[in-house]
Length: 211
Picture 1 (cartoon, rainbow, N blue to C red):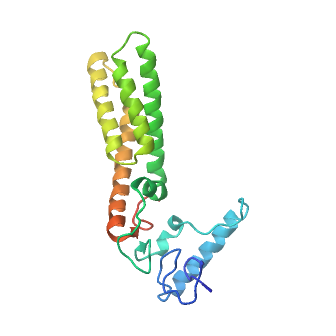
Picture 2: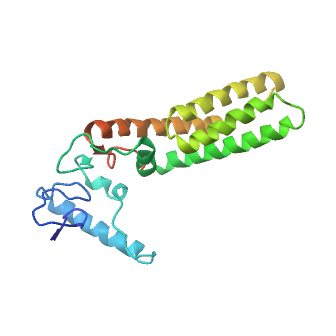
Picture 3: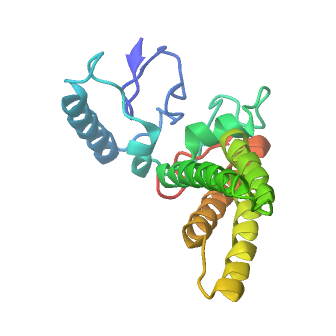
C-alpha cells in the first residue's frame, strides 16, 4: 500500500488514480504536493480535538489544488452506472449558502401558513388559499431540491406583495422574495452540475462556486 501524493489516502501500490480525490498520482508537482501536505497537517491540527480525532480534508477544502476534473469513478470516467438522485446530489454538493436559503424559505413558508390559518379563524377565509399554498410549498422545499420550487414560491409571494401594495399602500413578503431569488440562483448551479454529473460522471468539487 502507498499514500496518495495529493490527499494522503492509502491506496494500492498499482493504482494510477486515487480512489479518494480522483487525481492521477503519476502526474505530480512537487510544489503542489508540498502545499497539500502542509494543508493536511494544518487540517489535522484543527480537527485533532474533535470527536473521533482528525478527519481527512473535505473536497471543498482543497479544491484549489485541483487543475483537472474529478470523477466519481476515476479509473473509468463516464456516465455513472448507479447515479445518485438529484436530492442526494444537492445534499452532498450544494454550497452552504444555497442550503441555508432553502431552509430559511421553508421556515418562512411554514410561518406564513400558520399565520394564514390564524386569519382564517377570524373569518378571513380568503387566507385559506395562502395557508394551503405555503403549507404545500414548505413540504416541497423540504423534499424537492429543484430551482422551480422556490420560483413558484417567489412568483406567488410577488403577486401577493403587489396586491398588498395596491390595496393597503405597503408591500409585504419582501424577505420571501429575496430568499426565493437566492434559492433559484443557487439551485440553478446545482442543477447544471447534476446534469454534467449524469452525462460525464464529473463531480463538482472544483466547478461549484461558493463551496
